[in-house]
Image (cartoon, rainbow, N blue to C red; front, side):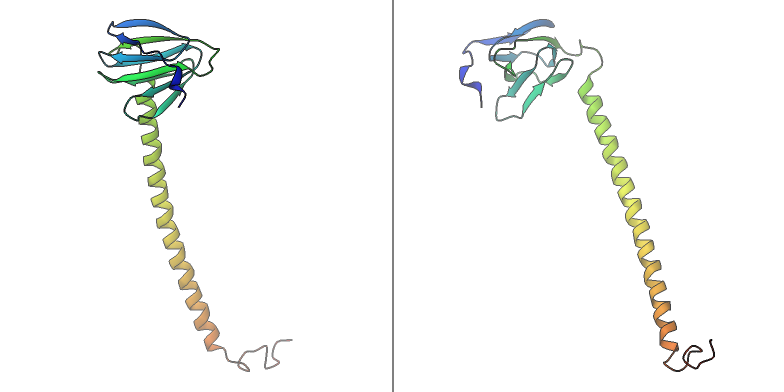
Length: 155
């Protein structure tokens, strides 16, 4: 991880709305749950406790839980970022839950489509086996010399 140059000071996010300027790694403590929104620049955010790293670009936001500690820093060392912290639901229309809902709907549709295709494939397989069985029976009924073609009747 790149957090070797992080500051030892912890910024506490305890106001409902707060503007943040990030020009180096900063450790944040969230007194309440809320949104972190990137206004300019790009940031790398890591949750304490082995959490997943997040890279956020302008316009993207991330929900952070009450009591969490995170380290946030510019994606590129020479490029500062401006952020907005909003406790609770102060930021309009949360994007990530909608995205998660959209992904869940796409997943459900894909599973439904896969099931329908499996069922159709099963029916096609049964039809192909039935046709193969009928063809084998028909071939078994025609012995060499019994066909009209082998008897010289077809010219």
